[in-house]
Length: 139
Image 1 (cartoon, helix red, strand yellow):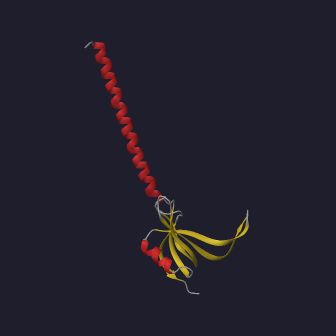
Image 2 (cartoon, rainbow, N blue to C red; image 1 turned 90 degrees about the horizontal axis):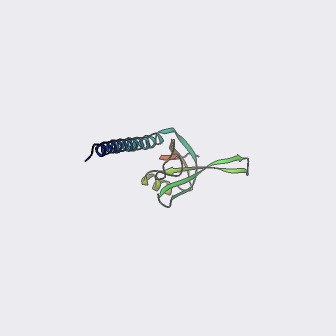
Image 3 (cartoon, rainbow, N blue to C red; image 1 turned 30 degrees about the vertical axis):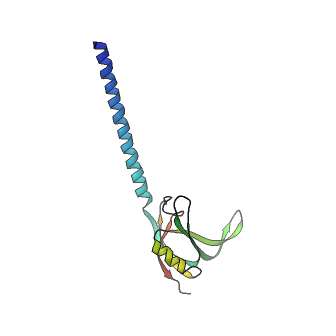
């Protein structure tokens, strides 16, 4: 093998090693970035309660089946485009036990204890509000 061929081969190996390290670093940064994003999105933004009449609870979704519900808070909201609208609050549920308890209380006045996340992932629910406890409301 000639000296020129050896120099070209060494140069090519150096470039390939650099490219491998570059893509390894990019891959590690991407994995860490996605993990950090998922972790931050799962932080609790706010926590509280809402009371009203439970009007809907269902399991829905095409790929990810999630529990979704609606609570009628009473009164009306003003909407600039359509005028007055009912004061409906949408929420999601993580746990099967809470979903079953909500099904038993559909149509009743309840107090829902929720945690609001920064952003929900598609497999968690459609809203950022997640119910973790339900109690009966006193009229």
